[in-house]
Amino acid sequence: MILENDVEFAVGYSEPNAGSDAASMRLKGVRHTTEDGREGWLLNGQKTWTTSAHFAEWYWCGVRTDPDNKHMGISLMLIPMDDPGITINGIWTMGDERTNEVWLDDVFVPDSTWWARSTTGSAYISQALDLERFTMFTY
Image (cartoon, rainbow, N blue to C red; front, side, top):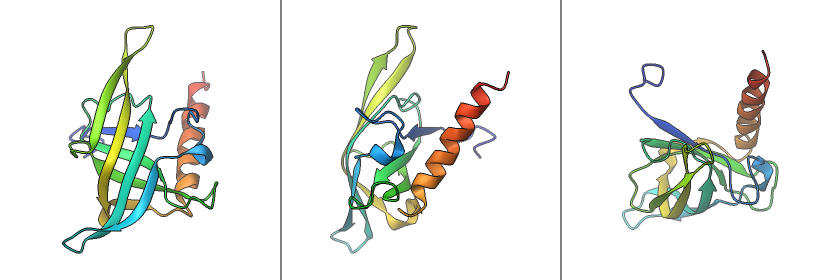
């Protein structure tokens, strides 16, 4: 589906005052049980420089789920972008391109979309960013 461009994703790693430094992520995820008994996470915080947030269907997002473990306390979650707790504000670059800040206010993420646990989330993010940075300079 991704390779066929059937689903649009946005990537949420960067945060204000942190850039893409995964260890400094502060978007907070707290364990939560809904009134109907569903287990998951309640998210609150902000991401920035999310280029495709204004048209994406899903958000691949780094979330601080263990505040006591700076480097291994990040989880990855898939979040539907049409959640009513998500607010997207456009940021226009000097080159007249749009990127975005994304606010998450009491966004519930069920355990079924909690992709990488806090012990592995930082590793996945670091590998992805290393690959991106390496391929930028292969010419």
